[in-house]
Image (cartoon, rainbow, N blue to C red; front, side, top):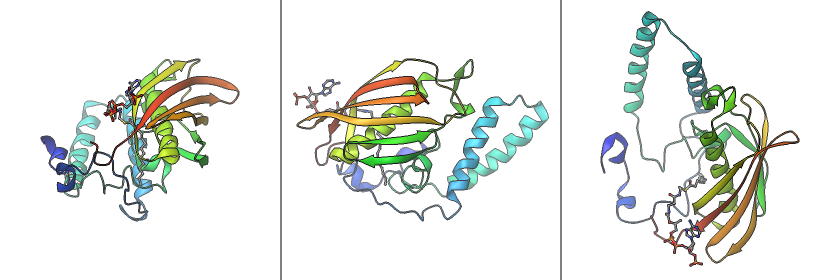
Length: 214
Ligand SMILES: CCCCCCCCCCCCCC(=O)SCCNC(=O)CCNC(=O)[C@H](O)C(C)(C)COP(=O)(O)OP(=O)(O)OC[C@H]1O[C@@H](n2cnc3c(N)ncnc32)[C@H](O)[C@@H]1OP(=O)(O)O
């Protein structure tokens, strides 16, 4: 493993326990009680960084503060299985910084319904969400639907039809449901809607991972 974070993988992963765990320790304590506010502040930072045109002086001021903050965070880096970003299921989007914050309105073995809001940092162009971020959100929520129905799965393919522009800063609804299953294969469908208007629909195949599969 190379890179700052590659070396942080626990020995169990190196020994072939598997890339996705059948159980992931789920706590709402890691990162502390204000961790959700920290993640939200990071998202706000990304929104403002995306929108800002700083002066040279302001840029340099922010740069030196950011370097100090990054040094602080480097001192508390841990592996992905225990990092709160991605495993804090009490927080919108599991505390994952890159995802549009989403929360579930309904979830079960047949499918899930989530409400989500793309942000300025998800901008593609002309006030619309970047198509890749739509894919990120759809993959995430379909993956969770597949997970609730079957267990730990991985995306084999994901086809997205962009039906109309996806707006920023708007409460959207993302529905994902199981269409059919065949052995390890789970075929799902999804729709992303702004009220009655469909922004995108998708179909995907998720494969149930074998024990120990990386
Ligand atoms: C507390 C914390 C909570 C955390 C929650 C976490 C939730 C996270 C939610 C986030 C979610 C994010 C999720 C992500 O983003 S997952 C990341 C993105 N996906 C990947 O990186 C996947 C890379 N690919 C692979 O790993 C393997 O290829 C997989 C695992 C997919 C299959 O390789 P494997 O060796 O295992 O199986 P197989 O090759 O024998 O295939 C099995 C069957 O499937 C059929 N097949 C395969 N591929 C395709 C295809 N493209 N079209 C049509 N069919 C396909 C194949 O013909 C066969 O069919 P059959 O012959 O049996 O009939």
